[in-house]
Length: 69
Image (cartoon, rainbow, N blue to C red; front, side, top):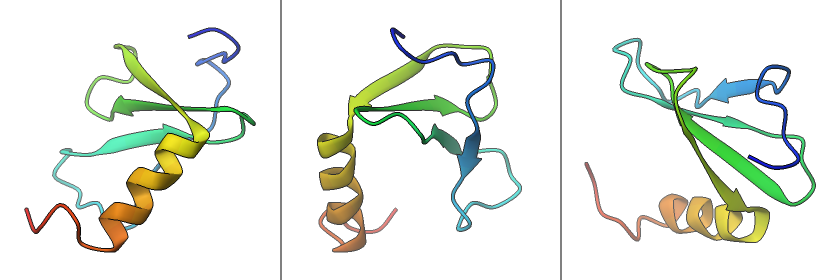
């Protein structure tokens, strides 16, 4: 993950997440990348998305483009 120190990144979960542990976390703060990881495995791999791609994904989720669970 070039340009992002995962040990000091502030990871956050959605306020919609339940306490069941089936969550993803994102680290915000980079101007051009958004790392995403599985909350059950914080030391495991993270996917890294361009900010514009992540923004488009979140907008599509909010618009219901992926249906419900």
